[in-house]
Length: 260
Image 1: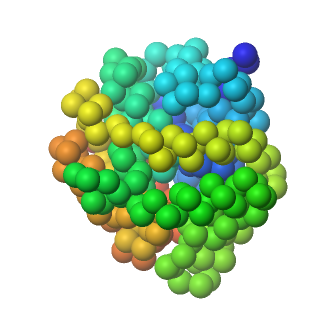
Image 2: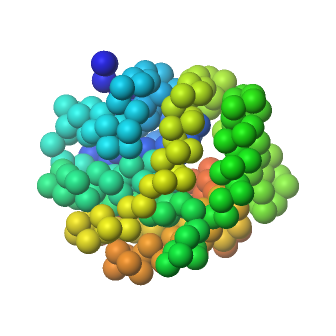
């Protein structure tokens, strides 16, 4: 089993970037340019995504998180961590399991429990995952493209067009995730519950969300911030990818928090 694919750029304190379901490191290109003067940026392809290989024997969420940890441990003894959506769940898991390695934590459109359930009304309706899983089984490429379209729904048309183009371009340039990794990711979102791990997260944390997000409701980010004793910044006209729809403000918010 080989290490995961990563790219390093910039100078300064180490900041790790973890992307969301079905995407890859290319989604961070604009943010990396904005932050390269302040941080040494480590962008990582999650297992089975982009150019990282997929090992079926290491398909459990714990095994995948351990692969991410092993790769990062070889690159930096201590780092700040920014995770988006599914990547945010990886980041939250790492912050709880490896507290000595992480200085600060930024979670973007992240919920500790993706689906709504008793005691967690802030999650997403199960129907969304069920439809996505059915589409994935029939036509993976179509399923991913429908998911990309959902990420921009609710934003102004010109913004939606620009963000959707950037998401699609990241896949064209850097490669799509393998179907097995996509299926495991949906399984992780369906079954995973990181709320018990929140008591182990003791680093300063910031939540960022988009008011119009149709995938991770902003109420989930606000509830997560309350549970973690963290601050939540809501982008009023953003959806699921505020770092692409509002790149300047996003970079400013992240930079100010990480350099406090």
